[in-house]
Image (tube, helix red, strand yellow):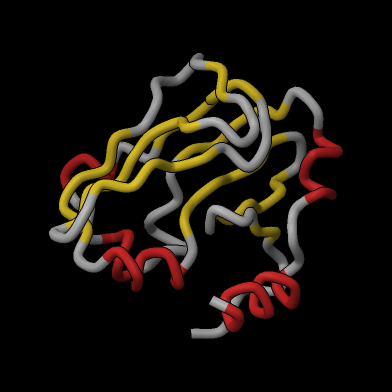
Length: 127
């Protein structure tokens, strides 16, 4: 699967899509492939504050539990509740159906510090 060029990426394998004033966050195709079959997703509540580089939730696979790290700081304005009943979306559609949260960033310039698709592809090739 090719890495979507319009997204930005964190070293912890989260992706960010800027949508006006807000950002949509999920985990990458590479991350879900490394984790294996996702069986549970734990996400914050609407209204929660998340902090860049700090855990904001977790995904549980048949192999392990992995924390989700916030790529930017801000307030959660929407949570993908479809993942409660269909955590497999993370494996099937990491960039479309399986977005995790939408946040209102407290500092939108944090997105500029994230990797481009090309930089992310280079990083995962080295791993």
